[in-house]
Image (cartoon, rainbow, N blue to C red; front, side, top):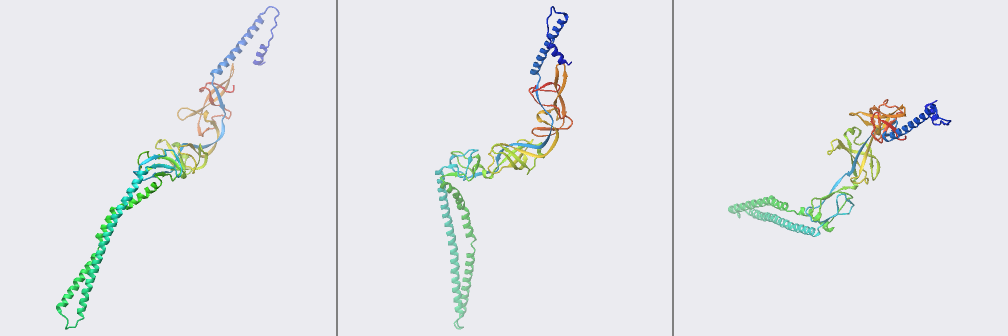
Length: 434
């Protein structure tokens, strides 16, 4: 007869009184009272255990395929920033944008002071007019000087020809009519006129000084510069001083201020038509798992998971030397500036025979790890569960499981993955379902 059957027989014992209690009957009563007390103590002990002994959740080792997966958390950033430039020194009435503003083609960014703009345009036109007059006078003086030289050549030529004709006429006279003194005089006059002509021609061809003087005047003028400036200001005046966007994008910086004056740049925008980029961070220890040109996925809040993106660059992180920056270029229309997300890089995979949830893995001394398994033993109060430390060697892990060396755990071992209290090696435990 088993112990449970004996206890049941004693509990179901029917006592029939037939006179005075004998010693045997008293013994039965005492035994019955003792058993009731023991049952009560057992129940009380179990109630106390339920309050003091940690309740645990368990799992068993499994075969799993673990993929080398690296995740890089980060944000969407500008891919290409474009500066919006304007003529410097223009008075500003209103600035209609701020950092983070979404702008479209034709949106008014800044409104300039129209009176100031008109005054500058008028001043430039006046300067151009004055400079053109100066150039006209210099050109006129140059042309006059050239014409004077040409006239001098023509005069010298005419005089030389006249002297030559006089000499020719003398040579046609008869010998009786010729006079040696006259002949010498005519020859001398011709040679003199010829030299004067050659000198006039040489002087006419020598325009270096005149050319230099005219060029110096041109170099001192700013007509071309004024025209370029006018070409920038006149359209602004025609647009009533409004500077509008030629791009669609997000404002990344604003330099202009209400009531201020323009510098060479009034603002910068991230061109939406060029797309954005996502910049994430990984630990340097994962460098071998990430390569430029590698295909990755991106989990982005507004767009969900985007597949088949390519790592554009991997660079050092000046803000954190223990990490690297991983950049992927986003398709046009995907993401918003400063939106958070996560790059998912998956490479080679392998099947492991013994894998446990990461929740079961505990850090030991240094780089060692261990797991707590549940062991059973019989006591006078019944079966008792105890946590036992088992050292393991981690071969690989992903976001959920860790692969440990085969042989350290049995297929049916119950491994502790959670508890309502701290559990250490040798502690009594009870399953959460109990």
